Amino acid sequence: MQERSRYLISRIWNTIRMSTFLLALLVVPLIISGCSYTAAPADLLQKPAIDKDKEKLAESISKALPQYSVLMVPHRDDFKEAIRVIDLDSDGTEEAVVSYYNEYSTPEIMVMKQTEHGWKQSVLIEQPLARDIAWLRITDMDGDGKFEFLTGWIGGFDSPNVLEVYSYKTKASRNDKGRWTLSPNQSIPYYLADTGDLNGDKLTDLVVVAESGSNGKMNNPTFVLITYEWKNNELAKQMKLKLPEDVNYYDRMLIGGVSADHQGIVLEGNTGAHSTLTYMYTWERSGLRLVYPNVELGLDGFSATPTASADMNNDGIIELHWVKEPPTNEGVAYANTIWINQWMQWDGKQGFKKIAEQYLDHTYGVILDIPDSWIGHYSMRMSPASSYGIVTFDYWNEAEQLTAELVTMYVVPVKQWKAVEAVWKEEERPYRMLATASGNHYLVSFKEEIPSDLPNKWHAKYEEMGKEVTRLSSYLKIEQED
Image (cartoon, rainbow, N blue to C red; front, top):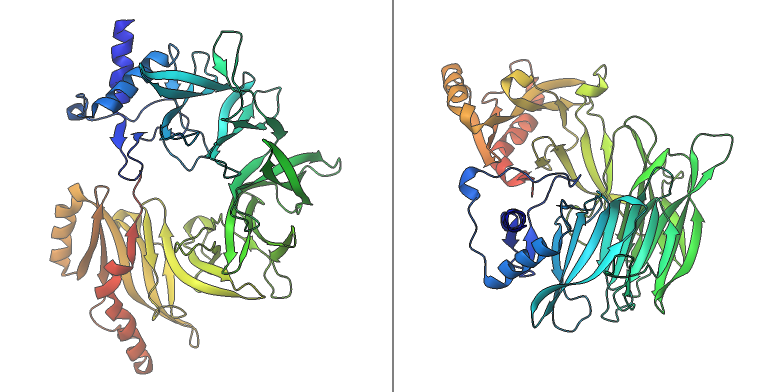
C-alpha cells in the first residue's frame, strides 16, 4: 500500500503546476481519453518544488482515489485539467474537484474539502450506468454563490446519454458503499449542451440539443433545442425549438454575443465526410430567431470543409467562420485544397462584415493574418512537402487570369535547419525567419525581383504586396499545445 501511495503521489506531483490567475492546483493536460499521462523526460521525474498546501492536497488525492483509478479530463470541458480548485459554496475556502476513472473504469467526480485535519473527501458525483463524461461545466447558474455541476454522461451500450445537474447546496446521502454522494437534482436526455447568458439577464442559461428520434423515413434523426434557466434548485424550461434536418448530427455549439447588441447561439452540424452547415440564432422576445443562413443574401450556411466559428478577436462577439477556395483552385483535388478563411460578424440587422481573413494550418499551429494589400489579389496552393513548404502565396490578377509566385512559407525542424540553410545559401535563395516554436523554424522565401512575364502595368501592385514580407512576422501567430 505504501508503494502504491508513493507511486500515485509521484504521478500527481509530476502533473502539478501553479496557475498565476487562480493560484490553484492544476494538472498538466492528459490525453483526451484519460488513459495515460504524457511521458516526461527523465530530468523531470524528480519531485518538483511545490508549497506544502499543494503537497498535502496531492497526498490526500492519492489516498482518496480508488485503487487502479486514473485521472481523466471530460471530452468537452473548457478546463483542460483533471484537478481544479474552486470555492464551491462561497465560504472563502476552496474545494478540490477531481475527475477520474475508478477501478472499474467508470467515470466519477470527487470533491475534496479542507478541514482542520487537512484535505478530506467530501462528496462523490457518480453515474454507475455511464462509461465516460462527455461534458462538464461547474458554474453558479443563478448567482446565489452555490455552484452547480452540469455533467453530460455518456451512457453504456444499452443506456442513453444523460445530462444531470447536481447542486452543491443539495444535502448529501450515502451510497451502498457508505460514501457521501450528491444525487442529481434533475436528469434530462441530451446530445449536446452548453451554458451562457442567452437572454442578457446576467445569469447562466443551459442550452441542450436533444435527439428526438428518427422519423421512420429518413436515416437522419430529428433534433430539438431546449433552453433552461435554474430556479429554486431545478431547471425551468424557457423554450423549445425544432432544429433544421439538413445535418447528420450537430457537433458544436457556442452561446454568447452574436452582434454588438444581441445574444444568441451558433450551431455547427455535419452534412457529409467533410462538409458542415452553420446556423446562427439571436434571442428576441423570449425566443430564438434564425439570422444565418440568409436566403435573401444568398447565404446558404454550407461549407465544403469543417468550420469552427469563434470569438476570434476577443471582442465578445462570435464570428462566423466562412471558407472559400482560392481563385486558382480549379482542378485541384480536395485533399490538396488550401482554404481561404474568413471571419464574418453579423451587424445585428441584415448584413455580415468581414473582421479578418487568414491562412490556417492546424498541423503546424499556423495562424497568418492576410495583409490588407493582399486581399482580393492573391491565391494559394500547396507546396511540395519534400521541401518543408506548407503553402505558396501567388499574386493573382482576376482581370487577366494570371498569377505570379510571391511568397512560400516553410516549417523546418530546428534540427534540420543547418542542412536546409546550407542548400538555400548555395541556391542564393532569399528568405526571412518569422518565428521559432515547438521545435520548428517558421520561415518564408520570396522573390526579390518582379517575374519577367508579369506585364508592366501590374508591377506596382506586385511590389506593394512583396513589401509585406518584412512585416509577416507581425501577422503570424503559432498555436502551441497546452
